[in-house]
Amino acid sequence: MVRRIFWMTVGAGAAVWAMNKANEASRRLTPDSLSGTAARGALRLGDAARQFAKDVQAGMAEREEQLRADLGLDGTAVVEPARRRPLTGRAIKAAPGAPRSAALPPSRSTPTPQIIASTPRQLEQRRGQHP
Image (cartoon, rainbow, N blue to C red; front, side):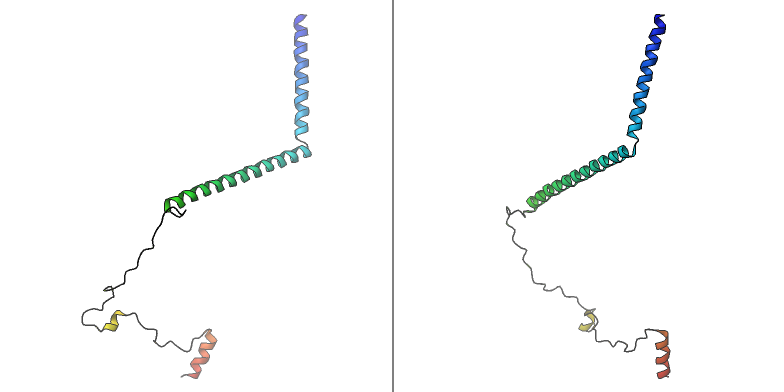
């Protein structure tokens, strides 16, 4: 008799637990609950992205400070500009026996064609003019 009461109590407890779980699941799966869960997830994602952007900005600022200090751009180092030396004796020379103008690039005084055909029809018309 005691065993029957024990098992009845266990069965009733299991039934209550199962009913509570089923009600909880049905509340979680309503459209309002699902949209609220999605909205909270989107807000968390937005917060995480914002925090990531702040971390990246902080890292960039820190690295920029390091680079400025290393390169002396923060005002701690005095760097004189490099002095230019005159370019003497570095001219390109022509081959032995060639005229001096052979070392120079070709001039732009070469004649360019005055008539440029843009379409086949214009080309045919111009051919007709000049036999």
